[in-house]
Image (cartoon, rainbow over all chains, first blue to last red; front, side):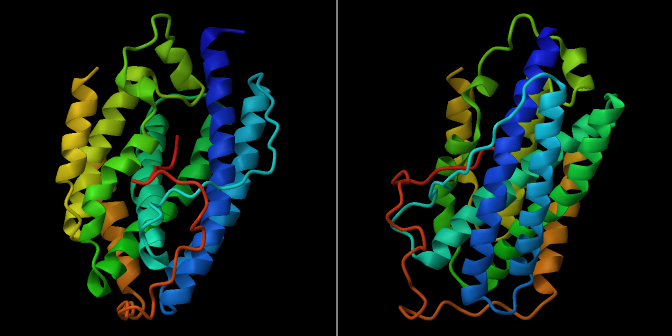
Amino acid sequence: MTSARRAAAEAWAFRARVEQEAALRFDRLAAVVAGFDAGSPVPAMMRRAADDERRHTDLCARLAASLGSPVRLEPVELPAIAPQSLDERRAALYEIVAACCITETESMATLTTLLAGESDPEVREVLHAISKDEVVHSRMGWAHLSRESTSAEVAFLGALVPGMLSGTIDEALLGPPPVDEDAEGLLQLGVLPHAKKREVFLGTLEQVVFPGLERFGVSPEPARQWLATAVGLR
Amino acid sequence: MLFKKLFQVLVLGGAVVGASAGCSQANAQDKGKKPAADAGATSAPSGGGVKGW
């Protein structure tokens, strides 16, 4: 097996697990948001998103297997990510911003970049199928933050965004690129090479996520400072 | 160009979706302050993040 194929198989297997967790998260958050914002379109979007994520889990797992890395998906328990000091409504906002405004927005940037390049037909089909759903998954986070910003205090999130980022960023992303990376081979198999992944990830934070947070009353300054330190340390 | 478009489609598009239904209810003091559904489950004191692609 080539190094690109092996790396891509692992990446798709990892994505299958990420999608499996996302399905559980969206099912849970849909019920929580419906409990305090009955008029919100977000819970229905989240229930549909959970179904999407279950479909994505299968797509990613099948691709991982076809690349040589069969995935055994065990039942998982979703870890709590919001600080324990937050009440239910604030904890839901925290988790939605982390999962949708940051992670799903980053996923969309990755997918869009991958779709702009050349990839194998089977991979491209999967990327297309997933990207049309991920647009909605990111939007539902911004929709919820937007609604909460008009009726509740959301500024508390500013100081907490660094914690979200530290749990999202893969340590390797901020380190040096792997020495034997086959950038072209990775792109064909639906994986961004290290340098491109870093460029897209940081660009999305600076030009999409941070301005978005600021627009709805969440200061991105603590996150900017955290990021500068994290990037500068490498 | 990619980022500008993503901002418009995701952030601004999301705000439009959020505003398309009635306004969210204000969080009445104390009344709505239930502990989080997963309170007590393991989480970092300062919170964590969600892994993605």
